[in-house]
Length: 165
Image (cartoon, rainbow, N blue to C red):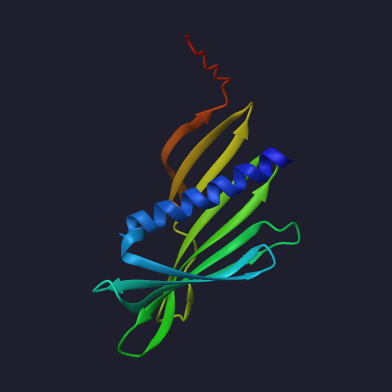
């Protein structure tokens, strides 16, 4: 069970890093304010650093956990400078099963004032010490998931380091 918890935490950090990287969030250009409830992060506000001294509101994340203290939702809000408020942006939903974590990505639909159904998802499966990764995209015409990417993320292998004198 401990390896599953480590896998989940690794996947959470990897997914966050990937989303931040794709969004162009470079750590030296941003400042972060984290709010916690005990050990759990409940929210994180991201500020852009301008002229090396001014903070400009940029993004806000809110996190929800299940009874087992696993992350089940990460909701992102973007700053609207005209309205001077944060607005819904996207949501990552985490689903857990035996040796598997599914991460669904949904976008905010302004017209419906709700999140759309998931149109992308990633599935991480722990199998015989390996983590298999599958990325899917929703096909509206077929009403089914299309497999876009599939590979082993890493193999659990023993590595011996030998030092020579």
